[in-house]
Length: 274
Image 1 (cartoon, rainbow, N blue to C red):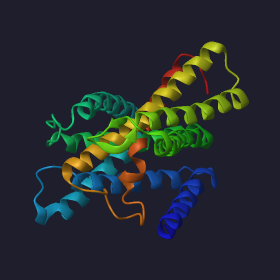
Image 2: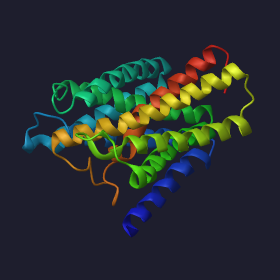
Image 3: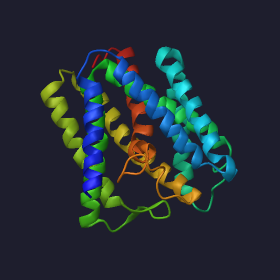
Image 4: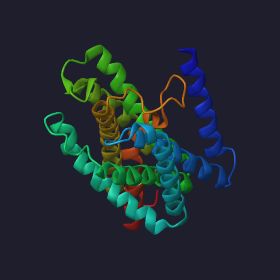
């Protein structure tokens, strides 16, 4: 437990420093590239059809390629927008995959190598884009995801009876999902009432975006759990003592970040400037 707490404190300190300690983009830029590379390395190790003798060198190559794609997308906004669209399409498909597991696992094939490039690069570029808009909007995204996860955990432990996806993540319950949504909605209402000056229609649009973001965070968690279960691996990595791998920490954000960033982009296009 102590190891887990120390790791969490270090992570929070590093991320918050990159977010708030300087107006320079470079610390956050570098953090996103490093996160993409490590997440890519871990993703490859979960993929099917690996030669055990070549896993590490190919995983490092995959991680470097993921970091390179993320770097391009961080420099060129059009690439980032394409990645977000492809990511959202992939997450829509994953709803069927999660619902059908384990009776259908045809998704577990070499195409996941391409999907990994898309999901990881889209997530880190989305996080950077939201931060670039305002560090406080990125903090809001984190609070939504963490709030939903914490609410689901505590409510699920106390009241959880009906399993949400027993074959994918046996500990998650429908009651926990409701608790997570309720917790996230408290955050949304506080932010809307205290900090935002929007019309009623704009408030509704922002609420819808926040709700969709929360649901997508749950989907991201379930999808990564399903891949690990299919690959027969408990944690995606060991780089974070007590927490597993980078993918284990950002699984919810893989889905939530591109959807939230794309939603903010669309809202801005229609005149809702957050």
